[in-house]
Structure formats: structure tokens, C-alpha cells
Image (cartoon, rainbow, N blue to C red; front, side, top):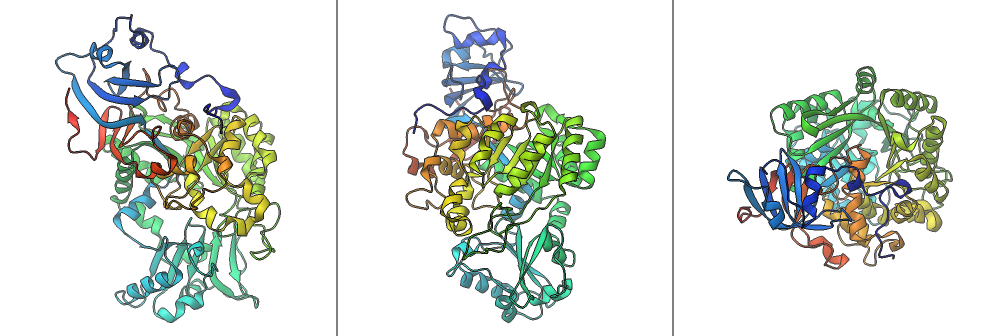
Length: 577
């Protein structure tokens, strides 16, 4: 692996630090210059990784009105202090604030509050035992729901059926979502309530899994899940109605060291709640919201983007669409079928009308919106790049592809040429290492999460987690996955296709600079330089100084957003000289 950091931007643009300069203060980086400017509200001291190649590490940051007004040696920065300046010694090594490039805050809130059965990492026997325990304390007729079963943890790793659930109860409808949320496992009571029979057709963009006789097996994929959700409890509806769920999720991001969140599919109700939290001064992270389809998309096409509300705290200027499903549920759209021994009759699902996609692209470009479609399979990605080309998309549009998991090598160069941003989730290594070779075979599996190939081609990579539709929402696991090519549990032991691993510096750039660029916020976020917001994450150790396998032991000791501490895990941290 080359020791040189890979370029974080298309066509090897100059460092983002060159885009913002405050002339009256930039001289603070030079010993001979006398500093000038307003007195600092706060001076943070310690060690800071700036990701600015011209000034990679500094001892102190001066902050006024939430922005960095000086970065350099402690003695230099102290020249901006007065009697009112607060001084805070950070309890570790600071890096630019982690950005969550693909987030589901209400899902995280539900996890924090323990609102659902969680089957992550369980064997099939453990899953059934957990459900049986809940049956005993649930009134007859009430729904039992849960999430995150993954046959990759089962032996044998086969899909479940309604017949597995039916012996547990004939009085409770049940629905359990697969890890990733693109498939549901239901019992016969739920199938009956939904009116699903052998004669029920697959809905557009969905699939009812069937046995050899044509009967529904009990697994519903993508849009077919709506057949049950329309007669059962809606987790989404409960989450939006319960005002405590969203704040709980946002606080968890702050505990993880996250300072900005890209919400991958927010409706009008959630955006309204963001505004309320902002007005009350209770947003612990910056929000870049991708408006969901339907009424929300129509509203924003009519009204236009909302950019930088509350001094950069809330922006709505993107739309979240769906091209296909997920690889685990065999809904990812592939050019060639899934493998023999897996499902050789299946090529996945196309979940969008292509003519409608062209129309949305044209309208979005005209109104100044970004398009961020979910596309996992190689065929879906190719179709989307084709649509971008038809629509005249350029680097300036900064259109994205969310997940971009299985990329035909011939399409990598098109990402770069069109300026399409790859919004990746390195923690998917956990799922994909468990079963993607079974789905794709030994050749196509090398197309999965080609992080290094994308970066070397000059593609912007923005890292995120997609949690709780993944193994982990912790950005430390993202860093570990990028550098070690291992899942949050340290597997596989030797790493997974490690030729795609990258170094710590490049990994941190995909976790800060990349998402900032992907949100049109590179002038304000992504690096610790003069003029940008004072958003940073304090780690327990220096990730540059420890082996890749030791990255998992890193913890977040402090999170600072706009110069305000949003999480402090160290009782000894605070004011000091």
C-alpha cells in the first residue's frame, strides 16, 4: 500500500483548506506574524489532527462564535485570549468531527430506548426462544415485532419460514425485519390478516417469496412488506409520533463522536421536529436531511432548498430515492443472476420507474437539489449512472449513490467523470463477509465495497453506517473497517479483500472531508482550520500510532460542535490551563 494519502476529491482538487482563508488570522500559523482579530470565546488546548496538509497538527484552537479563529501553537493562540476567554484542555487526541454520511436517527432512537426485539448476532434457535418469551407476556391478538435477524449467523444459513413461527403462537400476528430492513419474516396469522395467498401478485418493486407449490413462505422482500405493514403496527408512525425517539437517537450520535448527520430519508414531520429542536437549542448534531419521496419531495420541489438554518445546523437540499433492494434479501438488482446454490432464477428488483427518475433528476437540477438514490446491485448502479448521463449531470451537481455496494469495475471511472459521490458504509463488511460470496460468486464478490479503487480513480467517498440497518453505528467501527477491512467483531481474522484497505489519514478524510463535500459544506466542515466550525471528536488514543487491529480499543472522550461540548465522557475534562 502506498504511504501517500489517496485523493479525497475528484480530479485531485486542491485541499479543501485552500478554499477558505481568513487573511487577518491566517498569519497565526507563522511564528513571525502578530495575530489579530476578536478575542476568543474559548481556547481548546491539547493535540489536534487538522487534516490540513499545510499544518497537520496543532496544539491549540481559538474559537469565537462557534468558528475557529486561530489554529497553531499554544503560545500563538493564547494571544487572542482576554479575561473572559474560557480555556478547555481536551482529554485525548482531537480529529475533525466524525460525520455520519448515511443515518437513520429515529431507528437509532428506537434502539437506544429498546422499543423492539433485537435479534442481531443471534442463532435461529436463540431468535425463536426470544420470541417465545415475548409471546408469554403479550396479550392475545397483539402484534409481536422485532428486527435484525440475519441468516448469516445461522447454521444452516437458510431463510426462515412462517412454519418456523407458527408453533410459537396461533393468536399473535408476528413480523420481524431482516437486518437492513429490506425483508420481513412473518407468521401465518400475519399472512392471513394481510390477505396474502398463492394468488396474490408481487407488488411493483417487491417480492413475495414462495415455495415450489407457489404458496407464500413467510418472507416478504422490499415493497411486498407493505402488504403486512398496512394491517399491522407501523414502527415509523410510532417513531414520528413519539417526540422522545428522535432526540434519543441524536444524543447517541453525539456520544459516538458524531458532529454532523446525513439523515437518509426524512419526511415533513421529522423535518418539522428538527426545526423545533433547533429553535429550542437542543440539536446536538448538525443535520443534512435528504427529503423522502411522496409529499415531502413534492413540497420541496415547490418551495426549494433550505440551506444552513440556525448557523449551519439544518439543511434540506437532497432527495432520497430507491433504485433496488438489498443484497442480503436478494433484492439488489444484478446484471447476471444470483449464484447457483443461492437463487439462480433471481436478478433482484428495480424499485423505480426509469422515466420518473429522469424527470426527478431534471427537476432537482433545476431547483438546486441533490439526488441521493439507494443503489446496491451492479445493474442498479449502472442504470443510475446511465440516468445521470442522460440528465447531463456534472461534477457541480454532486449527485450521490447511497451504498454503491457492488460496482462493476467499468463503472468506477464513470463515478469520477460525472463527479458522482460514493456514499459507502464500511461496516457492511460484517454482513458482506458472511454471505456475499454465496450470493455473487468468487469473481463478482471482488466488486463489493471497492473503496481503494474508487479513491484511486479520484472519486469522493463519504463514509457512514446506515445503522440500525447494519452491524454497528459506531464510527470507530467505520475507521476500523476502512483500515483493517474487518467487521466490528474483528472478523474475518485476516481481513476481507484487504487490497481495498486504506490508511488512517485517508480513512479519516472519508469520515469528515468526504461527507462535508457531499453536503456542499466543505467551506465550513471537515477540517480544523481557520474559518471553519469548531467541530471535533476527541479520541482516547492516537489512531496514527497504534496497529490497525488496535483501532477497536479507541473510545470517544469528548465531542465538540461549534465550540460547544455535546458529549463529555471524561470527568476530569474541563477548564484548565
